[in-house]
Image (tube, rainbow, N blue to C red; front, side, top):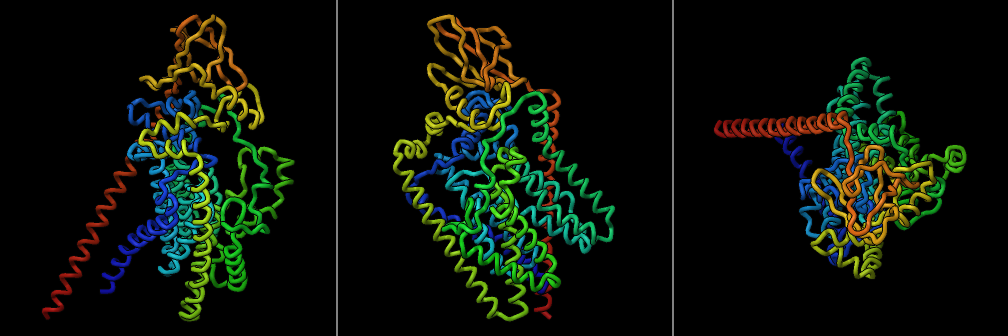
Length: 580
């Protein structure tokens, strides 16, 4: 009977976080569900343009891996190929089955909460945190930081935050390698998934894993095997992400790519002395900071007895310090200005901080409950519930405020409700984001943004149409024979023909081509010449993921069969015992 109960618990632990995450997401989404109003945040146009492009590629069976012919203008720029490529196609497919942008937004929040909730709950189970405490710390994660911020901003850090718990599950295995050797296949697949979703999240994931790996290597009985299997995991990850790093190798050596918009790191760090009503962006709620302080005090008093809790807490506190305005970001900005363009926001480190510290709190409460009785455990849980209610109240108030603000834009509200997805994109898809645009000479990112708005988003008199072969056709009428700068961009691999003639045109500052025109109708066709080496790498990545999927399905079927047979054996033994 004991074995049966253990297997029953495992089944419950797959079911509980799914139901609970859906419940929390529904409460969180009430302002959106009731009003059916969508929000267009700071990054919404940029990302929704990406997903619209992949959706139309799938719908029209007209694929162009690099050049975007439907979204982002369209103007031929490259984004998806180097920004979560496979995930972009996955969300494009999801967009196709959504009836409107509002429903797509709501669906994405549910999926985000599911991924984050299941991951945090299973990280808690990995650490042997009690179920009730696991649900509490999971709820805390869902209602703080970038995960809750997604619905109001479309900041893609949220997806890195949602996947971080799965990375930390691998961190626990690395930490405990002496007791049970880590699975290098799962480690490689986990990091590869993050890379297919969010590149910066991949860097932060590796950053989070390094201390656990070092500890594991120092304490394992077989250091050579651990190093070899870590290398195997890296090679597997490289195989499954061949399309990601392959795209960077195609673009960056032969093109001068614009940097992302620069933001002052010192002003976008977490301001620990500026307590906020909501734990997001640069502020953390006072009650959450109090929890962090209590956790730090507990570890200070018990660091010798609780190694894994100490590791989670200390690493979380170190990252919290680095992400905060206590860290000398102003000094680094002055000496290394590249930080402002590529790292941009130190508060991004919260995607590591929150799961680390919340998991540490779960370990602490479970330990207190086991050693000091249920009363201490109940008191600690009540404190967590109070913090959760405070966070939920703040989130709902902010969601209501943003929904009410969006209602004022009646035209955009109707566009986001319209089943015709193109209406919202066509009327609003003029991103000023300079990410991955090509430059003739180095320009400051905000200058590139202004040029993008004034020149690249010029729709006057141009008709754009994606045509078979992954090409973009631009037509316009001219009443003279003067040269004209087309509102498209050309990379070194781009090919352009105008009125049937192949051209190698003069390019302006952001590589928009100046072309000759004729009186009457003019036709330009833009395409991207994909190197054969990249095509091979893309096939390698696709085949790799298909193999992973097949093996995963086979293992899942074997798991179900094994547990079914086990339960039948237990049932049969029970009947025999009853008859005796």
